Length: 91
Image 1: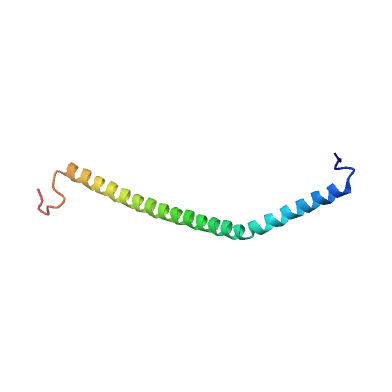
Image 2 (image 1 turned 90 degrees about the vertical axis):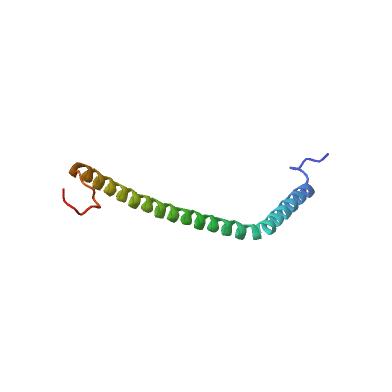
């Protein structure tokens, strides 16, 4: 059995196998890079859409909460005054 350090034929075979593997790897990943980049861009766009939707819903909730607080303060003021806020007649 020959040792790889002493036989030049084994060196040549190892280098050729390495180059073949390198070429096969390059050819197999050539289309994969584009797929990866397109999936990444789609994921970024999806995340940004979710962030915009979240911001819109949060703003909507804040607006509703402001409206609810205003109604509550008007309701509390109406209770203190002892009259119906929809009724225009004085007491």
